[in-house]
Image (cartoon, rainbow, N blue to C red; front, side, top):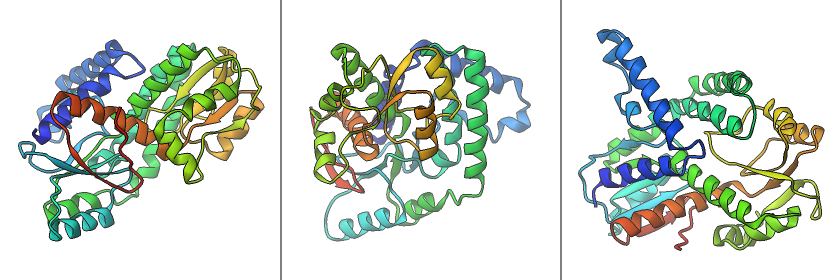
Length: 318
């Protein structure tokens, strides 16, 4: 199995599980191609060509030859300089590591990931919010996130990986799409009446069982065990937390409950204002579920992989 095989499968499966639907993903890529064709040759020199075929800016090969053979992968939710140094130390001790996969974006995948937030427009539109309204509130959030990234030193992980010659890639939205679609389908099949039924469902999955053992169990943030669910919206993809203005709009289109990885205190107060139930599934546990679903597909397609768990990642096979 080559590094490029892993990358291509991740992108392909990310599209298949994209909550927007494959047609809207293709429309997004078509728009990028038209934009590319319309710019001058001078501007094309620095254009991100990869974005014409990969819809996910935050899921990239950060460093490494795409044609290298991969048998052992070190995986972490967050991979920074210290984890790459750890990998080098393990290699020095005789442990093979062919690739490091980070969930959260680093390097170029981090400095451009604000573009991913634009997918939230279509995600909100699918819930019933008019697309013109969704566009306006999401564009404001995109600008906020972009401005917060501008001052960051985004190349530290790339530099460390290059100096130590250890391939690194990120798998962010491609994994988040998996957990979002998986849980939305499971909840839709369950047809839960009460919030406690959703929490019980989450606790059947090993990722959430493990999180419960270390004090991060799924919990109800707004509502109670016997609060009725109404329409349930699993909101776990699109780069980061969505625009705070979206809660008022979700209320008006009939969403009664949202299931999230994480939620700021400011956003939680907004959900209380509009009487929307909130279930906090858990951040790292949900990231683990998305990655594990992706790795299951990888192993079914190619071969069993030796995983080295670090930085909050735990491998659970299905």
